[in-house]
Length: 421
Image (cartoon, rainbow, N blue to C red):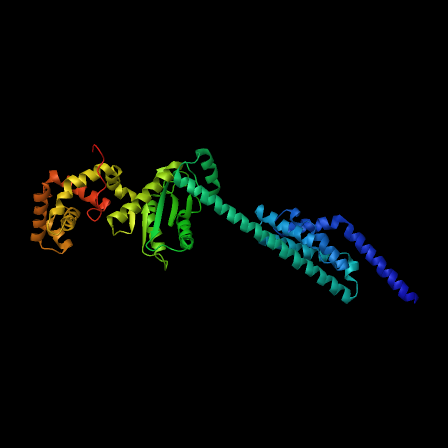
C-alpha cells in the first residue's frame, strides 16, 4: 500500500513538473524560431497557439477545440494573403510538431509505453487537425484572391479597350499586371467560326504559348463579347535590347496556329490592330482589330489572319458612308439592267482588278474564256460609261467595287442617300 502511494505521488509530482515546464514560454519560443527557420523564414505569427496545443496534447491528451482550429484556419488565410505558400505553411507546422516532441521534458518520455503511445497519438491528432484547418483557410483565401484578381483584371481590360478611363488611375491599376502603358502595345482579336458555349476554355493553352513567346509582362489574354483578346507589347525594349518587330509580325500567326489546334471553334479568324503608344493606344488598336474582323466578314476574305494595316483603304472608304453610297449608286447602279443582273459583272470587275488588270488571269480565276471577260468589261463600259482598261477610269471603278462589297450590294439595297449629297 505504501509503495502504491509513493508511485501515485511520484506520478502527480511528474505531471506538475511537466505542466510547469510547458508553462515556460522560453522553450516554446525557441521551438518556434527553429521551426520558422526550417520553413524558409516565415513569420512566427503563423503558428499562433499551435505549439501550446501540441504540448498540452502530449501531456494531457487534450484535443484542440473548435475555436482553436478556427483560429488556425484564420492563420492559413493570413498566410495566403501575405504571399506565404501552402507548402511553406505545412512545412512550418510539421517542423514545429517534430521539434516540440523532441524538446518535451524528459518526464513525458519516461512514462510507460502505453502513456507515451497515447501522448504520441494525441500529438499526431493535433497535427492532422491543425494542418487540415491551415490548408483549408489557405485554400479559401487563395480562391478569393484569384477571383478578386480576375475581377480586377477584367475591369482593367474593359477600361483599356474602351479608352475612356482616367489615365492616372489606369496606369496605376495596370502596373500590378505588368503593363507599362507608356510604351506601344497592339491588340489581336480571334473569333471562332462557331460560337463556343464557354470561350474561356479556349484561352488556357493560348495564354501559355503567348506568355512563353512574350514573357509574363506587358501581355494580357482574356475574352470579351465572344472574342479572344490578346494585348501584347509591340515596341523595342530599350533596356534589354529586344527587337520585337519579328514577334509583332508573327502575333496573328501565333494566335491562329494555337487556336486551330482546338477541337471546337475552328476555323478561327484573327485580326491584329496596329501598334500605338500610350494607354489610349490600346483602345485604338482594339478598334482597328474589331473593324478588321467586320471588314473581313463583309468582304468575304479567305485569309484567316487580317492585319489592320492591310485594310486601311477599306477604312477610308467606309468612314464616309454617305460618300461611298453615292459613289456605288452613281457608278454601278446601271449594272442592274444587265442580263443576269449586276453580280456577274461585279465579279468580273473584282477579278480583273485583283489580277492587276490582266484579262487572261481574270479569265482563269473566273473559269471563263478571255473573250467572255472582255465582253463583260465592254458591257460595264456601255452601261456605266467607265472603262476598266482606262487608267483614268480604273480608280473610280475599283473604289466603287470595294464600296459595293462593304455595303453588301447588290444583294442588299443601298442605304437611302443623304439629303444634299
